[in-house]
Amino acid sequence: MDITMAPNNGRKLRTKLAYCASLVTLACTAATLPASAAQSKLSPEIRTAFYGYQLNLPEQADKDKGAAWELEPSISWTRQSAGMQTRFSWQHNTVLYKDEQRDDRHFNDLSLANRMTFLRDRISWDLNASQSYQLRNSRLGIFSDKITGGENLSRVQRYGSGLSYRSLTSSPYRIEAALNYGTTDSQSPLIDDGLFEYKTDAYSGSWLLGTSQRALNFFWQYNGQLQEIERSSGPDVSIRNHGLVVGVPFAPNFSVIGRAGAERVDNGSAVDNKFDYFGAGVEYRFGARSRVNVTMNRSDSSVFGVEKDTDTYIASEFVIAPTRRTSLEGNFDRRYFGRTTSLQGRYDLRFLSMRLRMSDNIRTQNQFDREQEELGIFVCPDTAANFNDCYRPPTNQYVPVFGESLQELSIINAELREELVQTRNIGFSLGYSKNRLNLNLTLSSRKTDYLETNEFNRSNNISLDSSWRLDQLNRLTAAINYYDIDYRNEVRQDKNLSLSIGYIRTLGERSDLRLTARRLNRNSTLEQFDNSENRVWLEYKYRF
Picture (tube, rainbow, N blue to C red):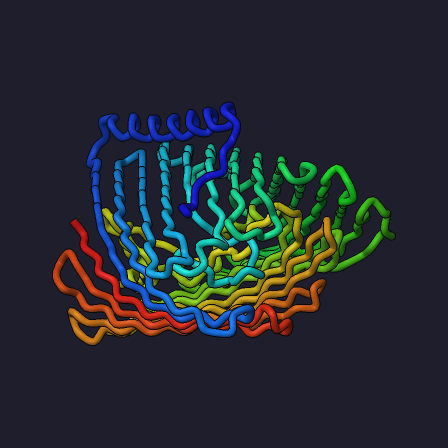
């Protein structure tokens, strides 16, 4: 049976169609406007693959052996000019099975992204729409894909728009403001994942106002964010926070600073959390843009509507950037749920890049979807399907040519639920590219607290992607991906492992052939969730 969208009422369907039509019409209309040095590129492609697989499932005494044929036509269109960038892609997958017990499946992936800029790039307007198939609940199998796990995937449709303003870097005052709207509509997969269908509408606004230089006689900065999230399966969520920092220099490179701010998280029900703080301290500046400050603060907070005692604590914020290639910035602070740490670090050489990240966040879980777990900056063709199609830029100042883009390759968030969560995420990544070798190593750890259901999960991930070019026409690839997921409330821990090796042969300027073997294994503390898969496939791709 084909995967199709569940029927909606007429008004909802007409609204979605009208919205999609308006996005496409606006993007195409803007694309026809005269612009200097405008470039367009149409990239049709066809891919076909033959799969052989062997599944070992706990409910079956014998191994499930089968074969499948996949046909994947796709089109990518890109247009770029001085004031506008448009990207549209469509991909259709037809999967036919030899096994009569499996129904043939069809998938359509769509993506439209359009950005227009005005006033020397100070104002930008983004429009986007997409349709994809994603796993919403990792308990069904974190490595589920369209070939042997299509029944676990939810069809997810997204629409959004954003308007932002950013002052020129040469301006004495820093002004940034943004308004964003996004909607996520997720259908139930064929196999019940316990989440049902849902629709989430998110409205947000953010701002930052202040002086550009902190070495002035008086500097200040005020920033904040408002977010309203409307959920179909639960009460609406309101998240608000803002903060003010002021400072007065009293000696070369030293300033007295004061700070104050507040945070609110309210779901109209049990979750009603508040945090207010103020404090003062000293800031030291060094180098071109480096600084460190330490403040003594007092705070009042309440969690789930229960007032807590006034607390006194030390906080620190820092930016350390000794060179253009190296930076580390972050803060040690406090919020209503306890001490927090935020870090963002990078180190870039010609052949090597490293990233470090640590953060604490609160929002509905599907708002973390596609959150960047940085693997380093790589140059990727617009038609790139995976890491093997990308490469490190030759210099840190590399400017992509038309049809390329600088991308921070990311790990997709494996959970797509609508519940309000509090997460702590730690990640480190290393990207290396020199001569014949491309390498990406990523380590990450995520703690997730579900505030409305009192669930708690912990996930640790290690992934390694590599590509070795034998010569101009031949490449070898290898990938290892490991997830250790602890579902505390279910007394269940899953160890998920994916191993794959591949060979790529370039047949000509427009075509290549790939042979890949993959092993999947899930070892759970609950025996009924153990499973494994062996798969081999041969694929051919032709670019018109």
